Length: 425
Image (cartoon, rainbow, N blue to C red):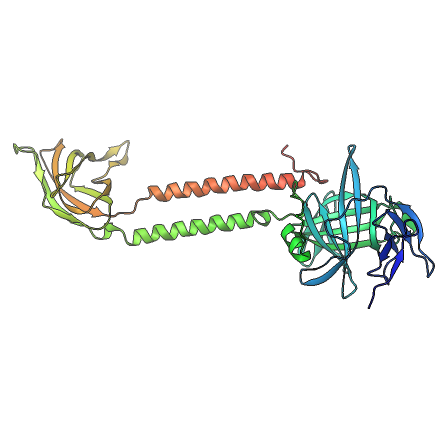
């Protein structure tokens, strides 16, 4: 069935009416003339757009947005002036097979899909920054503005006028928003409050939905309802860091559960005797298997208010390659001022990193302030340490701090131009 049409009274441009039953005003996309319909009479020119800015979605374009088949029937430009600077944007009117009018707005490359709602949101907090509740979600007041219409092209479902103003209050819960529109003073006798529910859209969704051939403009700045890349309130970022922390804990517990500390590869009782002429001792050989990994050598002593210093070589029995290291074990205790005290430990260990597999022995040269002492040398292979764990944990903490800072910067930029900018006083 052919759609009704009319000729522009000013330039005779044919105008197709795609929502004729609802149309009360129509703007000519050729000459900018704005016409109103009254009863069944011919349309009457009531104004004119001085400069027509072409839309990114052409009149009559058909597409699918959020599963709804839609047709673009008209668009208008709105503007506000702040500190002498004009900020303008485009609003598109769309109609579906159900006859419901929907909106899409584009502002600095950011897109929002809007539908009118019949249920008035509940005002749950008044004051300087009111909060409204809608479908179990709270929306904070972002800004209240009074834009005026500067351009009308295509069909409008009310008698729109050039210069017409509307009071707009915007409440956000990214990626959603609520918008309360109240007709301005120029139509005060018909003053009416209307609520709209919106959701932020990515440009790719608009391009795909209408199969647009020309690229849409890049985003500039942060939109009021633009979702944070870190999730609402940083939830996505916190979940990611929590997930990494959980993996870190699981890995560390896994390393501990397979720790070489449970299965020593060598254990030998030794004895230090200061009366012996030779103070160098050679242990039995022991086998280190597997890939290159650490070796932990533990010395357990029977020291009592004494110290013992170990100078050692761990020698590969096949290649002669040696690892040189030394450390001290000391243990002291007593009573001072009526209180007991303890210093040191009878047991101590040293770690040698990245030792290849092979057969080894220890060359031990102990020193001590006691004449005789017994000690046991125990060798462990592939013992998980806590150093890497705490380094990884530190990285996660730093990541968390950096992300928190970036979340703060993102939200600061979002609220910068609102009625409630974030301050750090």
